[in-house]
Amino acid sequence: MTFVVEVDVPVPMRDGTALATNVWRPEGPGPFPVLLVRTPYGKDDAGTFGNPKLPDVFALVEAGYAVVAQDVRGTSRSPGTFVPNAHEGSDGVDTLEWLAAQSWCDGAVGMWGGSYMGFTQWQAAVRGAPALRAIAPVMSSADLYGAPWYSPGGALSQDAVLTWGTLSALRNLRRDLADGRGDPSDAGVLLEGLADPRLLHDPLPVAERDVMTRHLPWVGEVLGHPERDAFWQRVAAIDHCDGITVPALNVGGWYDVFIGETVRSYTRMRRHGGSAEARDGQRLLIGPWCHADGTDLGTFPDRSFGLEGSIKAADVTAAHLRFFDRWVRGRTDTPDDPHPVRIFVMGVDQWRDEADWPLPDTRYTDFFLAGGGRANTATGDGVLTRDGAPVDAVDTFLYDPRRPVPTVGGTVLAAVPGAYPGPADQAAVEKREDVLCFTTAVLERPVEVTGHVTLVLHVSSSAPDTDFTGKLVDVHPDGKAILVCEGVQRARYRRSLTEPEPLEPGTVYELAIGLSVTSNVFLPGHRIRLEVSSSNFPRYDRNTNTGGTIATDGEDDLVVAVNRVHHGPARPSRLVLPLIERPAAVHPTKGEVRA
Ligand code: BEZ
Image (cartoon, rainbow, N blue to C red; front, top):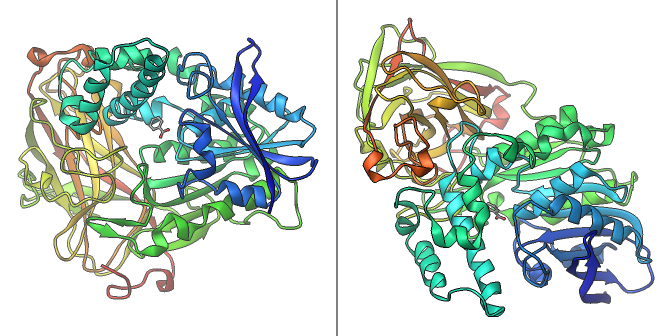
């Protein structure tokens, strides 16, 4: 087909700043429905993002949409200063109003794009504009505290903050240098951190990242707001979801740093969205993917989900077109997918359509921690059992922030030394004395876990504050211990993310630790394992165990904590798994699926 391209169209904002904008539209006067993406990563690449997580721009134009890509304020060819999220609400609304006034626009606009581009969608949606009809945030969040900057348990997502902060600081530096400002040697410091993440992550205090914060002061502000205070509430679109009247297609990956918030956006909008369309039109699509590119084929070094697990196989472009045709074009003759939820079920490695999330037939089931008090390492005596622990016991480990448990795979943004995002074998960390392992007997029948995984622990510590981490692991018959999902709870935030409370050393507390969400069938011959520790670094920042301000604690402040997990009839520490029982046809037995 022939289409028209306009480059660097200046779109005026309310303060007079004109944001650089590209337009691709079918030839002819139109008017056309419009699909808008607002990006800090360079609008000129929008036509060739080549990112299979995002829809194919040419397919969208061919389907009759005008596609509009804009550099957000202070990035690429748009003037101003880039302050993440500071202007996305008003700039988004101004752009939507400008679009609605163009002769080639039919007055209906959808927004799309991944990650930061998703933040811009939620900010525009919460402010509202008559032209906006639907949004499609891919691997994104409407609550930036929950992801990507902190986590639901209150620990800093250090990997995401410092990796993304470095990349953004580099982009800002490039602009400064082009304008004859800035110090070229800063580039070397920033690039060294990317090349060797130990240089990026290990130095303390975390808050002293001068080069990064000089170019992106917002990173300093993130580190200065460890509680979910007004700084975060201001940009948490999800806190005001009853004011959001447009439906969203939420796309996520089980191993994406945003997955918890992707799912929460769906569940909150489905129940509390500001219109029937917003509630009924919510869609959720989740594959076995992580945030970084390179794993889009559904194949990771320790685990392959097969080509069915690839993003291409999920046909994200077709999902966008179905969704936008329904809500932006208003076509009811080709209805949007009748199933609001489509998930890739790992283990059986199959796609499945579902009626809602959490799945309506979920049975939350306790798996109790048991053993004689030597659960340290995978060869210890820790047991996970549905029957309840017969005797009371205590497992003890030393958590030394100078020697944190290294992150191996999981929901990191980018590769960290010796690891990569996704379903990695945990064998190396399960040899550590500071990792407790609780494992079921070999399964005789498939056990499907789909939904929110919660760990309830009875704990005590010698420190006034410390962390407890958990990982759900699928132990394969060959012994590979593949990470399924993970989480952390910072003890001071056990009751509230806004009003921290120190621990009384030695007192036993019950903590609920969210281990996020998953969908995984543990096959016959496999075992279900829970790992408990106090660090997962640099996925999360190290708790310094002082009870003070963690980001400003230095090397000399670090304290070793003696941490204990109590279990048994008196203190029923347990993993609460969302079990799904379906006919045998959807749960093949061992041998019918790839190992
Ligand atoms: C992203 O746009 O990919 C992104 C933004 C913020 C944090 C992490 C990732």
